Length: 265
Image (cartoon, rainbow, N blue to C red; front, side):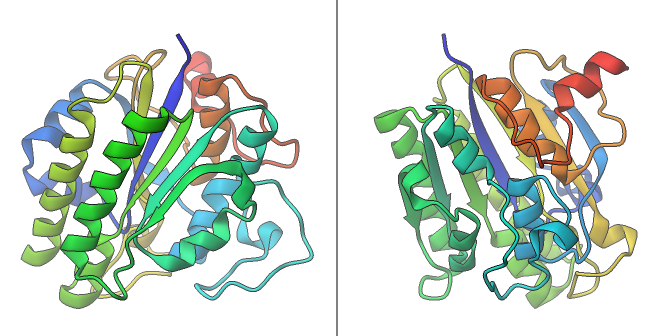
């Protein structure tokens, strides 16, 4: 049986908010997982730089993306998608913030990529359609790596403030989507749930702990429920994915597989 990965990212999901949102699937998922609620993202703690760090396992000073406006850089670092494609693995992406398409960098690495843009579709409808597309895509193609982006928490944080009732409602909504996707997910998928950054008041992007601290929660073979990842970073996720699916990390990546960090504890 192949080992595959479903990576689900809740944009702007603070760890303390996950603890307080009260959704029963969060409690169930956490109890079945190894995790940290104290991982660190990168500066600037903004969505596009954080995603580039996620998928290139490097800091913004190296990959060159420091704002939510993408400009091609002379620096060339293979993304997770390219590295998996090089290793003969298939990838799919499902998202609702159009700028994320720049993080793929190599469209040929995708077996499927679906966008339901929140610029043109109401936020909850776009996120619901995105999750439904992921569920169908997994059934149809069974990709080795699936990236599912849920942007609802970030939208609510900017509009109503982080930790507001509306923000907490958006997290409960996001967990309901995740529960639906996981309800018939094949057993060969390890599920990684994480955020790109946190937030405070109605913003993020700073070095304050509320912006920089993110959750990384992993359920699957090789991850013992209750194990805690120490000193984890957003840059550790790409090497973790390649480790799980049996591919090699790109030499310039700076992170370390969280499977290795468990072994060292």
